[in-house]
Amino acid sequence: MTNAEIAARLELVADLLEFQGANPFRIRAYRNGARAIHDLAEPVESVLADPERHLTDIQGIGKDLAQKVADLVETGRLAILDELLEEIPESVLAILRVPGLGPKKAAALFRELGIHTLDQLRVACETGQVRTLKGFAAKTEKAILENIDIASEADKRTYWAIADEIVQKLLAHFRECESVERIEAAGSYRRGKETVGDLDFLALADDATAVMDHFAAFPGIGKTLLRGDTKMSIRLEVGIQVDLRVVPAESFGAAMQYFTGSQAHNVVLRGMAKARGLKINEYGVFRGDEQIAGDDEAGVYAALDLPCFPPELREARREFDWAAAGGLPELIELKDLCGDLHCHSTWSDGMNTIEEMAAAAKALGHSYLAITDHSKRVAMAGGLDEDQLLRQWEEIDRINETLKGFRLLKGVEVDILEGGGLDLGDDVLAQGDWIVASVHYGQNQSRERITQRVVEALENPHVCALGHPTGRLLNRRKPYEIDMEAVFRAAADNGKLLELNAHPKRLDLDDLACASAKHYGVPVVISTDAHIIEGLSALRYGVLQARRGGLTKDDVANTRTWPQLKKMIGGKR
DNA sequence: GCCGTTTTCGGCCCGACTGTTTTCAGTCG
Image (tube, rainbow, N blue to C red):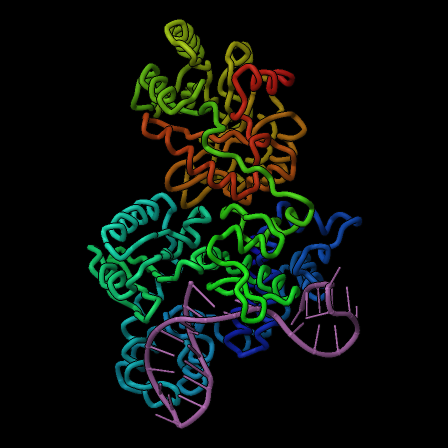
C-alpha cells in the first residue's frame, strides 16, 4: 500500500470524525498523521520492514496511529474507518464540499432531514425544507443552491503555469489602481505548488474601498463571494477563487508570511511563538500589546530566531528541523542550470531543427543541449535506427564546429522494450555522449514487470539517465505503475540519474519525488522533453518542484558543466 | 490523538466575514 493510499484513508477518517462532531484536536491528529505519511521520502512499508526503525519516530505519528497504520498495511483494513462508515454514508462528504457548509451544518442536514447526497440537498432547498432548520434561514438556503454546483468541482486545482498567467493579469490590473502602493501574490502560488487551489493577493493601499472597487472591475470576474472592510473574495469566470486582503504597511510582512502559508507551517510557527510568550497573527508578532515585528517577512521569522524560509519550503515537512540543525539547504535556482538534457528535433517528432534548438538553448544562457531523439521502436514518432542515429551524430559533430561557447551533446532517448532490453545496440550507444532510457510501450504491464524492465535498463553501462521515471508526463490520466523505491535504489547502486521531465501542465517527478531522490542519493536531471523551442523554457517549472523537494545545486546533475557532468557519468559508462 | 524549555496532563493558531443570533456560532483560509 502506497503512502498516498494510507494517507487518504487517514484523511477519510478525519473527514468522517469531523462530520460526527468529534474532538477537533483528535481530527487534527489524524490530518497531521496523514500529511506526515503522505510527505514521507520513503514508503511506510520499508520503515515497517526495518526492525531498527519505528513509525513513532515520525513527527505526528504516536503509538496509536502507528498501530493503526501497521494494521492497515498488514490487513488492508482500518477498523475505525469501517466503524465510521457503518454509521455515516461516505456520500455525506460531498455535502461538506459545498462552500458555506461545514461539519456542523452538514450534520444537522443529515440528522434532521436525512440528507446525504447533493441531489437530496438540492431538492430540500428547492422545497424550502432547509430553512425550517435551526441555524438555517432563507438566505442560507439560497446560498446553498447557488453553491451546490461548485461542490462537484471543489477539488479542481489549476496548474501552476495557468495560475501564473492569471496572477500576472491580476497584478497588472491592481497596479492600474492609484491607491495601490504595493501588490503581491501569496498562497500556494507563491509556494510554487504544482497545482494551485485559489489565489491570494495582498495590497498595501491608502484607500481599501478604492482597491476593492477596482478589484470588482476586473474583466473576467464571475461573482463577488464576500466583501468586508479589509477582505474581499471573488470567483473568476474560469472558476478560480481569488482572495484579496488590504493590509497596513506595518503589517505587510506579517500578512505575506501568514497568507503564504502553508496552514500547517503557520500552525507550527504559532506554536513556537506561543512557547516563547509571543503571539503571531497577520498583523505582526506581539509581546503583550507591543508589536515587535511585522513590516517585513524576514523580521517575523527573525523574531523567533528562524531563517526566512523560501516559500517553496513552507510545508511543515523538514524546514523547521533544518533550521534547528543550523541551516536551510541552498535551493537550486533556474540560473544554476547549464543545459537541458532531453529534447527532440525534426530528426524524429520534434518541430525544430537541431540548429534552431541549439540557438534557443544558447539564448536561454545554456552552455550545452543534448539532442535525444527517439529510437526506432517509436516508429510513430519517426524514431531513429542505428544508421540514422550515427548519421545524426556526425551532423551534430559538424554543427558543433560552428558553435562558439556552446556544445550539442550526441544523445538519444533509447526505448526500453516491452520484452526487456534496449532498442539500440551497445556498440552504437557507446559512441554517444548522453543516453536516456525511457519506457514508451508496454505501459499496461504489471508494476513488477515494468519495474524489472527499468531496473535492468539502469544496469546497462551505457545508460546515463532514466527518462519519464513515473510515466506522468507520458500519460497524465494513467501513468504506468512502477515501484519507485526499487528504481531509486537501482539508480543509486548503478550511479545513474533520474530525469525530472518538466512541462507547463505536468512533471514526471514532483516535489515529493525530488525529496525521495535526495533521500536515496540519486541526482536529478531537470529537463524538458521539449519538442519545440518554446518547450525549453519549461525548465522553470521543474526548478520550482525541485526547490520544493529541498534540492540544492549539488543534487541536480545539470548544474554541472559538460566536462564535470561527463566525469560524473563517465565512471559508470 | 499527539506531545513535552507547558514534559505523562492539559494543552493544542488566529482572525475576518456572514447569517443568524439579540451576543454568537459556523465557516473559511
